[in-house]
Amino acid sequence: MITSRKARAYFNNKIRNLEVYLETLASQFGYDVTFKRNV
Image (cartoon, rainbow, N blue to C red; front, top):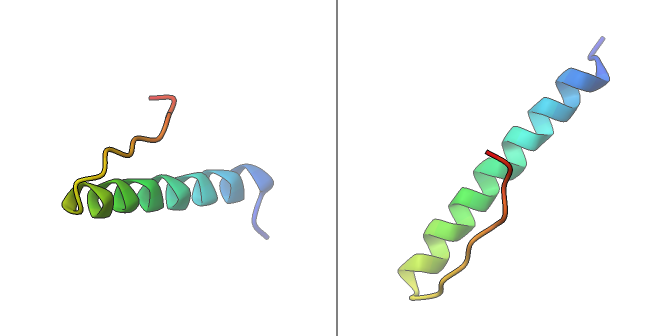
């Protein structure tokens, strides 16, 4: 059974990867897109 903490970490990681992908994609088209992340 998946704990909620593991699930949350998993989805947070997926969302972060998606944000990085979108930033990279946007930069290729000349857009300046940055997501605010707690690092």
